[in-house]
Image (cartoon, rainbow, N blue to C red; front, side):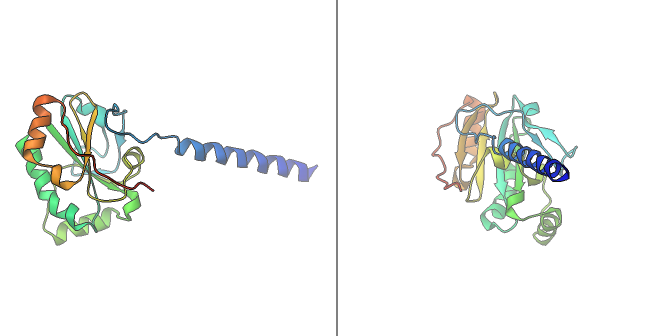
Length: 185
């Protein structure tokens, strides 16, 4: 009787783990034309709170900048992102998204900022898993453009992130940019 009870408990545990694993993979990757769901950013630094809901920024253009401490193009672009935020103050919100899969943690990020004498004026999501599930990529930097109504209007690389393109999106609520080709694993 004891053996049967143990087998039943083990079988139930296996079923439970399988259901939980399927739930984690049920996040459908978002693409251009999709409406941004109510994503919560956690582990924020350089922001008034440690969390933020992207839905709270409706009415502003949102630019998600996926980056890593080991990506030189990403690091070189940080001052430009600060500049854009300042230039379009009140109309643009830039978030620096550092994904857990990059291997970075808070210590690595702070060490990098000290080493390059950079103080971000933008919220930085540390070890994000939520956004990186919705926006899959393999190459960095990776930018997701969201208009004032919460529609994803572009997914690009670094060269498309210009003052003129941000201004165009703020003015017209849409933009036609080449889609970043990224082989997703």
